[in-house]
Amino acid sequence: MSSALDRLKSLTNKISGYEMARKENLKFLRELYSEIGIDKKVEEFNELFDFKAINLSGASLLSESLGEIKKGKYLQILAIGYDKDALVKSKNISLGYFGRAENIDAELKEKIVEFIIRYRFEKSFITLEHYHDMLAPYNTKNV
Image (cartoon, rainbow, N blue to C red):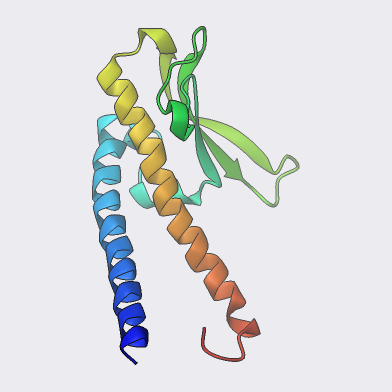
């Protein structure tokens, strides 16, 4: 029984940790949203999550080279919008254009990269909740 109780405590701590991390992440994401000027393109913060994804050109988002500049490229935040009724279903929308990547202030570049990573962190929670809800009709027992 002690083993089951220990596993439950561990799971509870992990879930609590994720919720705290998510809350903190949203706080910082909201600040970055204004600091890097995304609020000028997307008026309401929550509308960010209507996009299928937000990507970055001009700098790496890979963990092994995070933030590394791609020489000769332009630093730009691109959102992928989706309209199921349109002839062309998805389209790229520029949320921020910052010029040649190698000329960008290092602090600004770090904030831009951080914004994308924090957005993706929150978007992953939203996606998880969506699919959890979609599975409800298939669950015949509590999961």
